Length: 198
Image (cartoon, rainbow, N blue to C red; front, side, top):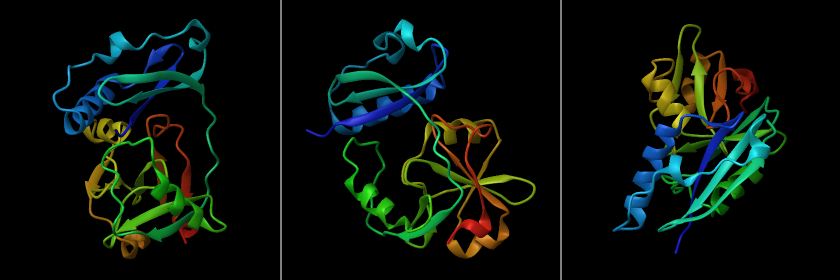
């Protein structure tokens, strides 16, 4: 049986963007484990006292039920360059614990810090983040993500980012790219100059 993963930012003892994580958690369980009894994450997650100060990664591993909940310290990676890599077969609609294909693509980054995956001619995601692009006025995110992230959903809902198709040939229209995920919002995301995308 496959195992899935939900990663939530825990900041000073508070779970961030929990409704978005609950929604994705529910969808993933319904898609893989029917029938399944609904699990309320706010009740299932007990925050230990030692993670009430600072930023931690709450990692939920689940199948038909929750298999494990752990809290890990989080360090932000420094990313200043991206390598375009192409894969037209990769499928990561759900956040699986097994991600060998993503890791194989990450190994193709060469001298760059991270990758930017191109599928069927369209830009999708980096290794562990959704990507957004700034055109001088607005931030845009591709409408072809491998995994629609919770931070991405929140920022779209708040109209802080907008959605469109983006190909490698469109990159010249943008000034910079930002990398967002559950742990990285627009205030603390890595930002990469467009010239640093190879």
